[in-house]
Amino acid sequence: QVQLVESGGGSVQAGGSLRLSCAVSGYTYSVSCMGWFRQAPGKERGGVAAIDSDGSTTYAESVKGRFTISKDNAKNTLYLQMNSLNSEDTGMYYCAADRRRCSIVSMTWGPRTADFRYWGQGTQVTVSS
Image 1 (tube, rainbow, N blue to C red):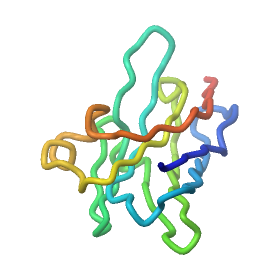
Image 2: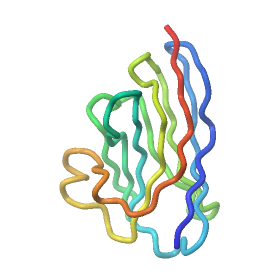
Image 3: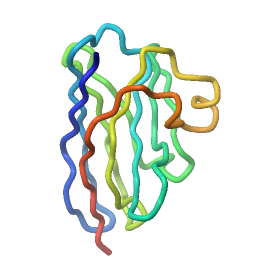
Image 4: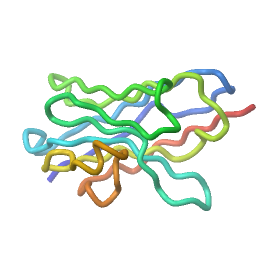
């Protein structure tokens, strides 16, 4: 099993920045693809960014140029640096992982929930204008 625990959420004004972290524990060696998703009230959970075992990344169009996904294998931690935040970035942010490599579809069009088996509990991000 793989356990994921997010942290770093909070409230920020539009234009500000936040860095989310996701601590990975359990069978960490088995994780290949990791990603960030978000869900706003009344909306479906959608992909934000993903990173494959070889370090290649993919982003949703809405966050390209503003968000950066990265990982520290030595610390078993996934990060999401979020800059130039706006009100549309408000939502619960979830960390996700899977033992398989990131799918071609995810790497082309952005991460899909169906491609990830393990999920964290989420951390809330609120952006006020």
